[in-house]
Figure 1 (cartoon, rainbow, N blue to C red):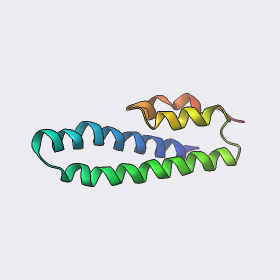
Figure 2 (figure 1 turned 45 degrees about the vertical axis):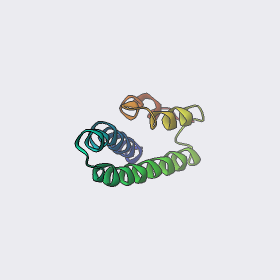
Figure 3 (figure 1 turned 90 degrees about the vertical axis):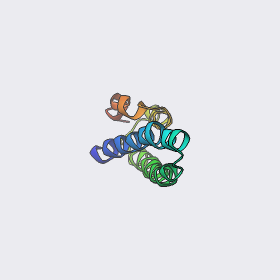
Figure 4 (figure 1 turned 90 degrees about the horizontal axis):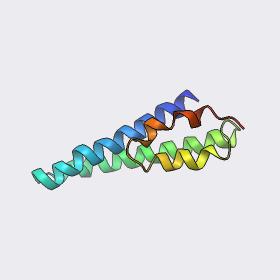
Length: 91
């Protein structure tokens, strides 16, 4: 499950970078390139994380009740960093 935890942190870090760095650079500094670069990076990290959650669930490493929480955490800033207890739940 360590790869899933790493993917969660990577997804969370790219979301934070997108929201707290790239978007302000676009809006306040007039640098739309920041979002043009960080947006696809975050999108790829999210898709990899989603695939890994579904993979670990299909292999029986995650309980059914943990999956919605892990997916919801991906949409909430800092959520990926608070989802640790969900990684410990087994089927």
